[in-house]
Image (cartoon, rainbow, N blue to C red; front, side, top):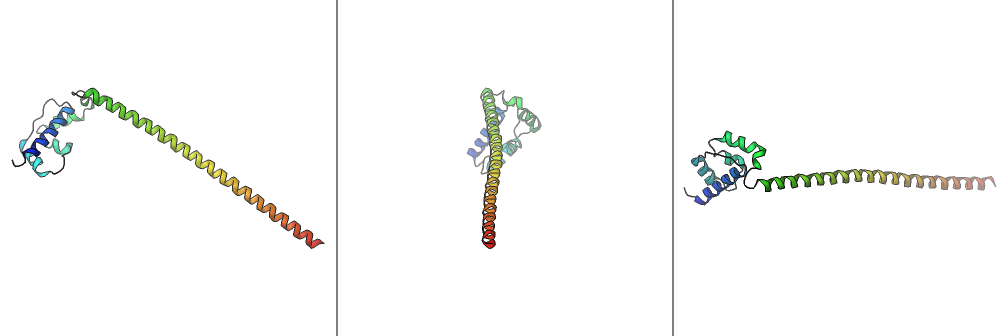
Length: 142
């Protein structure tokens, strides 16, 4: 083992992941753990950490069970964070839908206002054209 610091980091991350999901028992293959620590320059993700487990199916079953996530030592904190996250997402989504609705109504008002302005200008031009043509006709009739 040439990189004991990297091995201890990977082992710490694996232990942290297993404690987070309250996995009761995990058997680790040390050779895969050392290989993962020596080859990776970045932090390993959950999939790479799970490859180090011999009883991977049992560990995945425990990890994929969402109830076990909130049974660990920091379970109530994680549950509160999850509730806050979902509430904030809901509030942001409702604000976004209200914004989209308001923007669509503002667009409709802008279109109608432009149409009104165009119609008003067109009527004024037609009225001016009619007055000019009537005045020209009166001049021609004299």
